[in-house]
Length: 173
Length: 198
Image 1 (spheres, each protein chain N blue to C red):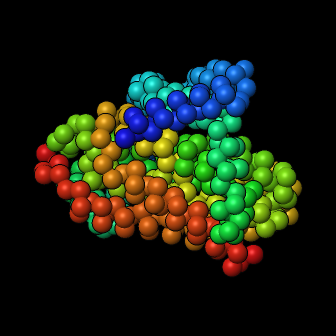
Image 2 (cartoon, helix red, strand yellow):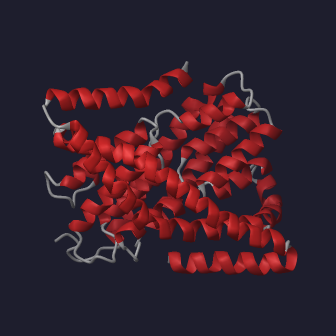
């Protein structure tokens, strides 16, 4: 049911936007084309930042460094009841969207989606967005080099989201 | 700061990979990432064209002003720097709305437009404005009401109750956004730059 509603969203939105445009008597075909034309230049401005982040992240994962860090930290994790299976996701979530998708899929395959771990991973995934990627992309696209407190704030938000996910799952599930 | 982070991430990964990992995998990692970026970008060109086209219609039909006006009381509190009626509000409003509705691929081009509009108000073009920090922190803490992608993955991997995590996720993400906004406000006070708005 939820699936169906979310599939409806995009066509519905397009319909509503176009109907409103008709109501306001604007040339929608022209307007759409004018707006769409920008996508190439926006992607162009975003591409260099995308590639720098994705290469760094790709290296981080393929070198095995990520796994090493996780293994190294596992005693501490056990101590704070941070389930080991979910830790890669917690680390990856602020770093890479596709990476965390991959890890989530992996976790859900190895632990059933309705299992405790499965639910915790799902919650964690939705509690926060990909920090470094978003910061690098958005700031980079307008040429900002000094991020000031954005990184700190964002990481604090991510951390609280992750901790909240864990605690809430222990309480609720 | 991102410069250092990036540098250390790559250097540490390569050194670790050479000594403890598989050099072949290492190289593959680089090449895969480069290739994926292109594939991603091509997808972006298409998907963003759709949303940017719709955004133009929203702009010309003045629907964007209606949406901005609706959210203005909230936006004014979060972004005190931005003068009333500025275009930035419209773009921010669209980005946040798209995020809430779970339309991540729409939110990004709107968000990039919002950054552009805010940059126009920026006194020092290389330094982040307070509004930009706030905006990005809200974005990265995720304001999605319904995590559609997660639900989809759960259901495709055999969950009997894919939406069981929705409520908990909502609470967790609200907490993360609250913490993000609060810390931005606090850190802003400690990190004043004189006259960042033109």
